[in-house]
Length: 298
Ligand SMILES: Nc1nc(=O)c2c([nH]1)NC[C@@H]1CN(c3ccc(C(=O)N[C@@H](CCC(=O)O)C(=O)O)cc3)C=[N+]21
Figure 1 (tube, rainbow, N blue to C red):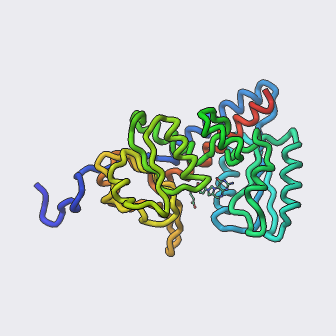
Figure 2: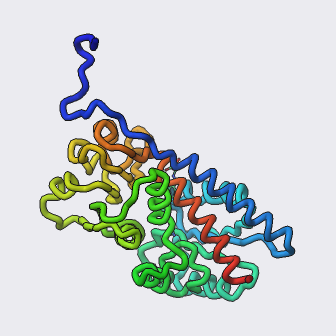
Figure 3: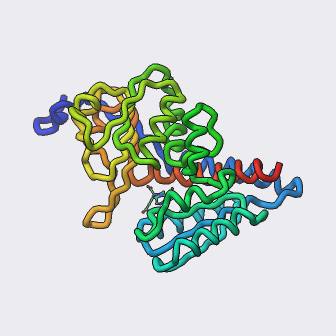
């Protein structure tokens, strides 16, 4: 019998969601990429090479760049880094991108976002050779995903889909709600879910009755960048919750967009932050870099 004072919180199902361990899944995937790289290298191909371009000193970008370099080492991918002060001109950046496009020793090009405000990010992305666009941000790759013929898929939404696969739950006909309509998370995540034949609702800052839409969802993907934006008691019992937010709190700790402690008492599966979608993004980047190297050097 329960002792007094230990009752489950109101609204709790008495259950606790299973955790989707992005760190572990990403380690497995990076190991798979490593085996494929080793096989190609054993067959006289050079190792895949990823060029990472960082302009300015966004602290979040610096963490990402560091984690990417570590992942490249584990995957057997050569990583080339280009770092510039925020004062770099857009023309100089475009010239670098064009020279990386031409360089036969480079398979993947990643220009870290956000770029300084004096630059036009769309123009920079459109200058990247779509076959080297390992972020999947070029309109060519985005369009291919929209047309059900994906080539290089945006890493974060692709990582979300791999995590959803790990649940073993069939997404066909499920009601999925994506919160956030950004070019790098919400929109491509919605296209991925549609490709998996879910029924998709995309919510954004002008959406009315967001809580009701979330309450109806079998799958919730949150990418808004605001801590606790998705209240735990909105989650339908048994739903799958994927938290794409990575927010740094005043105490330096990371948290997602979802009120995790309550959501986990209702969800069937949930991703933690950190250790959820973030590491998956990096694993998918390694996969894209390998795939780009195969496409370019068949
Ligand atoms: N062109 C471009 N492509 C990107 O994919 C891109 C970008 N620009 N700019 C910045 C954002 C951010 N981003 C992250 C990816 C992984 C983690 C990650 O691995 N996070 C770990 C730990 C982070 C930590 O310890 O601080 C985690 O969530 O567990 C974080 C952030 C990719 N981005």
